[in-house]
Image (tube, rainbow, N blue to C red):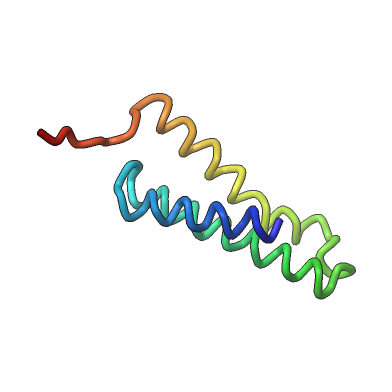
Length: 85
């Protein structure tokens, strides 16, 4: 999960910089995967504290919401790509 969080933080940061999706969605996605990264590190450091259901919901739910919203956005609206000639 550490590498998953880092990978998608970088990916969504690039979406943020390139404006393929609205910046607010990419920013929220970057934040949500930063939470996954923090959750994974904290699970390694203090696993007994991170097993509480409310902690898991707080750290993991934003990434689910991000996947659903950005996936729906790309299916419905598509990516904004400029034609160069």
